[in-house]
Length: 241
Image (cartoon, rainbow, N blue to C red; front, side, top):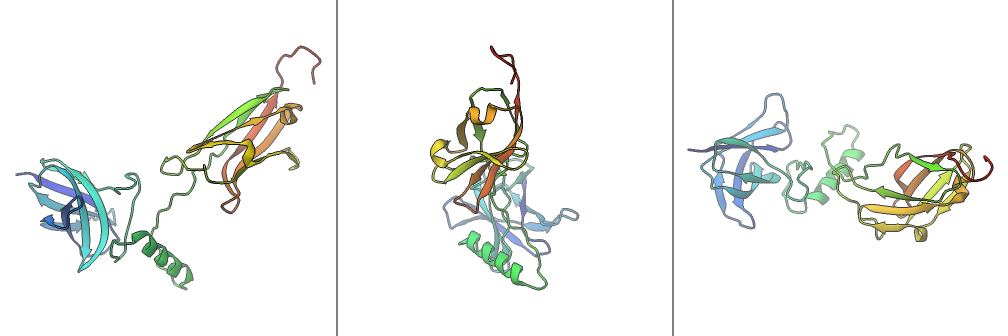
């Protein structure tokens, strides 16, 4: 007999039941014989099943008649513990608090808005996909050269950000905060998860450290990447600058 324990996430302190469904099926394959919350890892539940055939299943957790979490899980016909995951983003954690799983994201946003307006909010985690800013993504350039910069852009789940339809700009400033050059969207080469641009001699004509940022001006001037540009001297046929 194979005892298959599925570990999944839901709001802490609930009395839950859980059922497995084949993908795209409304028929219950099996309901858990036991669902319990971990003693110390709050919000981590274990649901125990027996001899479920190997395959990929949807796991839906219920608090009474309300579904509160929807996951997928890959099972083998062995006695083991299996971790449920978000079918869209396997690295993400999705939590529903007393919600029907239909239109889950919009319902979570409604809860978040209500929490913000509450004088005594109960903070439930809502996970988003904001950019993973390239902090201190420093560049080195040499005096009087023209360099091509290639930046990789991902979110915190390490997924490439689709920037092809966004309007971006690159700003380079000197140590006094004065603009040295602004490269508009038309001067950038964009693809999903990547942007390249050229820094010319207007930047490298003088030695020193500059600051730069790549901004998404279609989304609240959001910074996607930033860092320093260190312009150094290398031997050149001619006078030292």
